[in-house]
Length: 368
Ligand SMILES: NC(=O)c1ccc[n+]([C@@H]2O[C@H](COP(=O)([O-])OP(=O)(O)OC[C@H]3O[C@@H](n4cnc5c(N)ncnc54)[C@H](O)[C@@H]3O)[C@@H](O)[C@H]2O)c1
Image (cartoon, rainbow, N blue to C red; front, side, top):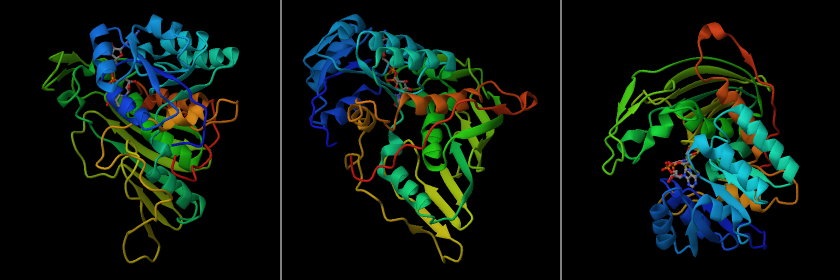
C-alpha cells in the first residue's frame, strides 16, 4: 500500500464500533501487521482478536508493555484519547489516534509536547482526505480549474448514530457532538484544499435534551444530551476564503451538498468527506452542465464499499524519520482548535481568532 518496506507492528487500543474498519484496512497493508488488541472489556478484545486473527489480546497496560508493538492505534472514545495517547508515547510507541485528537485543546497541546519530548510520532484521524475524492479536488484547486477559491459550504446532517451504534453516549458528551465528531472530516478536507483558518464565529444550540437509542443491539436506551448538537458558523481562512458551515445531529436530512468550493472560475462539488472515494464534479463559468473531474488515482476503498481505515496509519508509518506527514498531530491540532472555538457558542461571543496554523499537507500523487 505504501513504498515503505519496513515492517511496523500495530497494537490497537479499543475494540469497539470502528475497530473492524481498522482491522480490515490494516489487514490490507502487509507491512503493518496487527499484533495485539486491547479493550477494557476483555471479552470484546478476545472476540476481536479471534475474528481478525490477531495473535495477542488483553488490557491497555499489557499492550503498552508489549515490546512487539511499534505503533499504537488509539481508537477509544474521545474522553480517553489524551490520557492513553500520552501513556503510549511515554511507553515508547508511535501513536495514531482517532479524531478528535483530544477532548480539549489543552490536552491536545500536552500530547504534542509529550510527542516532542519522547521523539515519538503522533498522527490523528481523519485520513479520509488522503482518499481519491479529496486528492482529486486538491489537484483541481491547485491547477486553477475553478480559479481563486473564495468561499465554500460545509454541511453535516445527523449520522443517525442512535439507529446503529450500540452505545453512542460519548457522542452526546464533551469531546463528541457534531462539531467535534463530524467536523474533523470537513475541516481536514477544507484545510487540505484552502490552507489554515484564521477566524471563526458561530452559534450553537441543541434541539433535544434526550436521545432515544433504537439501534437493534443497543446497550443503552436513552442518552442525556450534554453538548450542543447544532452549530451554524462562518470560518474565515488565512487565504481570504470564507466557509459557511452547519454541523448538526438535529437536522435529520437535507438536500444541501456536503462540501462545495466556490472559485472565481467555477464550482467544485465533493462527495461526503467522511468517505475516501466518489465523484468530484465541476461546473465552470460557461459550462453547459456539471462534469466529473478525472480522478487522480483509483478508488482506495474496497469495492463494494465496506468500512475501512488504514491510510493515516500507513502515512504515519512512512514518515517516522521526522519529515512532515499528512494526518499529523499538528494538522489535527489546528483542526481541533478551530472546531473547539465553535463549541457552546452564542453570536454575542463574537469572533475568535485562531492562534495555531498548519501547512497544507503534501498532495498524494499516487494510490497509497
Ligand atoms: N463508530 C464509528 O463509526 C466511528 C467512525 C469513525 C471514527 N470513530 C472514532 O473512533 C473512536 C471510537 O469510536 P467507537 O464508535 O469505536 O467507540 P466505542 O465506544 O464503540 O468503542 C471504544 C472502545 O474503547 C474501549 N476503551 C475505552 N477506554 C479504554 C481503555 N482504557 N483501555 C482499553 N480499551 C478502552 C471501550 O471499552 C470500547 O470498546 C472515537 O474517537 C470515534 O470518534 C468512530
